[in-house]
Length: 183
Image (tube, rainbow, N blue to C red; front, side):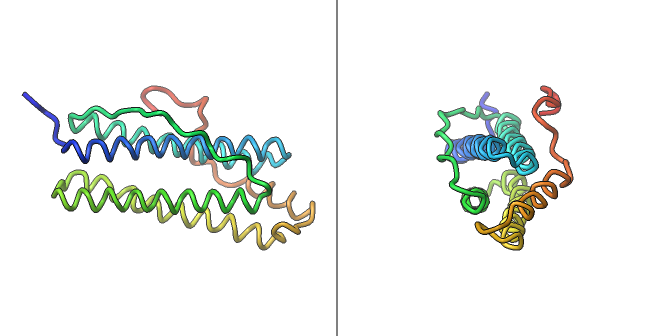
């Protein structure tokens, strides 16, 4: 008996989103490595935590597809973008990545609505809310950098910004704390 409760179209779209979340994780990991290399350890830690959060989002999609009787497909993940030229480009990249992800989330909500798959539509509402938070967070990074002076910020301002980012709440577990039961 076929126990898959997802249409092939929706199953593929959810798998595609799982892969987009993995790509986002790699992108933020890459940005974190760039920031760490530049001496911005607080910003790097923030980006590493954000990378882990994106990985957790991919796991949510994976588990949902499996729980609905489907089989998610892991695709090749594109390479992250090139290193940013400066913090402005880094934070702009984070924001743009979140906006692009929001567009993908909305497309999934639309598809679930078109197919009258109310379970998936309901599942996606968590991600709709999450993207509001993600875009707000990314926008606040841009604002904080502007307040610090943007590309013309003094070393002291950047030092203060980096320290502020280091002391930001750490509500995302680091990779070394992850387990199979607690990804």
